[in-house]
Length: 115
Image 1: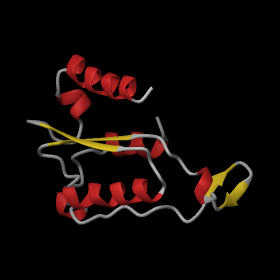
Image 2: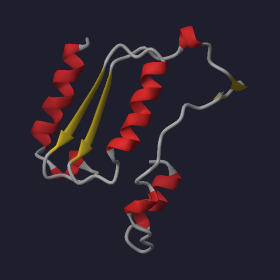
Image 3: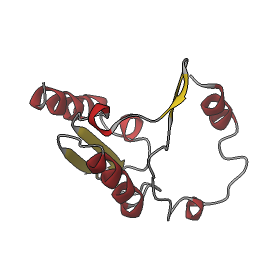
Image 4: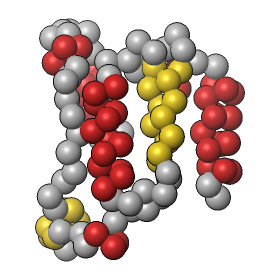
């Protein structure tokens, strides 16, 4: 687990600024890709064209405004298809909050559909 994510989990709930802090966040594509070889721009024809599955919870702090930005990015990168799913009764961690078998079957079905 990345150190920054581990740190966030260790301090979860100790500093609360509310979900309003990210409510209007709109994703934007990176201007460069960083690799072991340094920074470089990825040519449009080499960008990811894989299908995308966006899953969020009904009570998620990730709003429709946020996912709209992601859908715009994936579309501009030429993704084959974009499917968005909102899981009823869940917040942000659907894979922990929902029945694991159902969550897994949703992801598995999507993968089989695009295999």
